[in-house]
Amino acid sequence: MELVFATHNNHKVAEIKPLIPSSIQVKTLTEIGITEEIPETADTIEGNALLKVRFIYERLKCNCFADDTGLEVAAINGEPGVYSARYAGEGKSAADNIEKLLGKLKNAPNRTAKFRTVIAAILDGKEYTFEGTVHGLISEMRLGEKGFGYDPIFVPDGYMVSFAQMTMEEKNRISHRGLAVKKFAEFLTAKY
Image 1 (cartoon, rainbow, N blue to C red):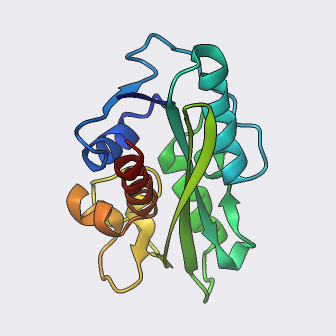
Image 2 (cartoon, rainbow, N blue to C red):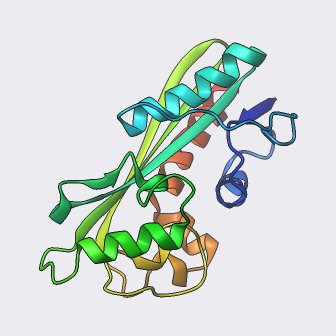
């Protein structure tokens, strides 16, 4: 079976592809010739994942999936949440997002946070969602060089290292995206 992943983000592709059953061929938007960005205008993580997967399904009528992820920090009322990718503003980098977040948390005693990923899929015309959540803390500084996004400042519960200090295999075992993809992969294995 072929499955279109509604993303242009190569970091996400590298994390997700190894977790999908080998009998399923995952194609990215770039691989199928779609170069435009899909608008993310919903006010929830679930809503954005559904917007992206519906966009692809309406155009191609194929089996497809998308994900959306948000970092929710308790001390700042769940920010950046659905705005995680563009927290510092449109066109800003992950480093800018981290800088803004660390600035807002300066001297904050409560640094608890959670990462949430929702995968939305349309398979044989039916919609499904799968969620993964991991709890942790926001470090006071960047730790590590691996990963992407907020990985250098997120230390998952039970660990002394950030996601950016873990191998991809270690991170995939416990991460929000890894957990959501595992649920999705188990569903795919049972269904196909």
